[in-house]
Length: 496
Image 1 (cartoon, rainbow, N blue to C red):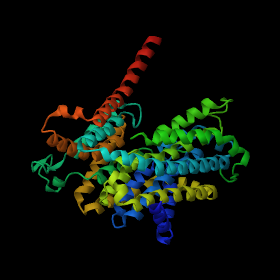
Image 2: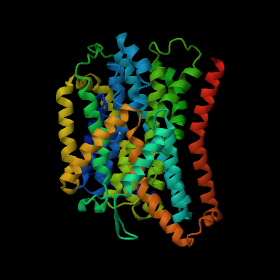
Image 3: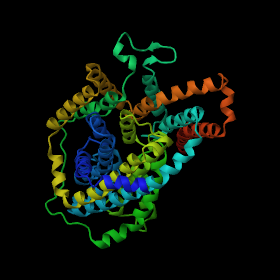
Image 4: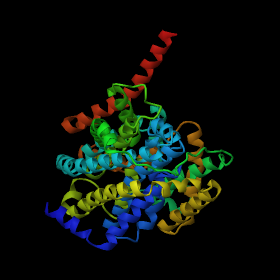
């Protein structure tokens, strides 16, 4: 409690409040731009936080994360173009409501549900993260190896319906993590004569390239696309009766989002889809869903925002990213010399509670911003793509170069962008590659340390109960999606 009060007192500083305010407004703006996700924005902003102190830097990224998750609902409702993947389910009923001239009602429900889900997720984070960190005190190198392996196995279900492709992407990320000098043997690996690669490939230019660079190339092929925009001249906010009607859906989606968010690598997209499906399943009258039912907005918006803070639980307590954006925040912690895990709660508790307070403030701020500035933020969608994306590309180049003042990092960003564009064309996601790159170092180092402890006897891994449990969970995590797909194919074949 003392650490929480100390962290809260820090936010009496106008500078910190301004940082959170800037991050929140920027998150809403970024979320409202189709194609610009909070993951991409945090990746672009990360190099510019290197000169900041840890608390303001992580507070800025956390506020952007929370607000960006909500901001995607604006374009989902107004132009049927979700600003971020978690907002895709919001468009199912949000856009039909906007077409009926009730855009204000839809935006208001989205704002309130998102704020409730976000605040609930911060409470989950405050309670669950320290408990999980205490359990992690029993972890040694073997346990961390099994945990990192389990985190990689969760990539099978992180995005899309291609578990094999996700695992392939994660394996490629681990391969990238092996580039550079092996400090055990002193041998350079995969450097191809470039001495700059001896320190390895930094994940920041790769991250910027895979997200921002790939999206830049994708948007370049859509310059001739015409977007139909809903009329928003008369914005009428929802009534108290509308909120009362959505309360059971909001309560249900809070639990769904928090549970899904705590699972490593799941994130808000899965939570939003389940939240929408459950809202429809529990509704007495299902015929209105898909045609403009406000519960079809409250369900996914509450769930995807409830997953934001919950996704920070494994990130802070175990160093396993809970989503693509928390992978970026994990990278920010590492850049600032902080290693997530149980020791973080003892050595820098003020930093952690500073993150909690920043996320809580961000949710309160974007509630006001969403209710008061719906019409203003909707104008962001009018920015021509031909002006927006070249600006993003320039920021991507600056952000990549700023990390180590190396042109090689800019080239890595460009190559990663081209690679990400090609991989997306063939159904591969960028998030598994990023998580594989971040977790790859932990997998390699903990495995080496474990083998030294066990005198290279692999069977001694089975002497540790936590390791055995995590390895069994890994096998289930990898096998379950593949088994479901095989079972679905057999069922489809039998039906035909």
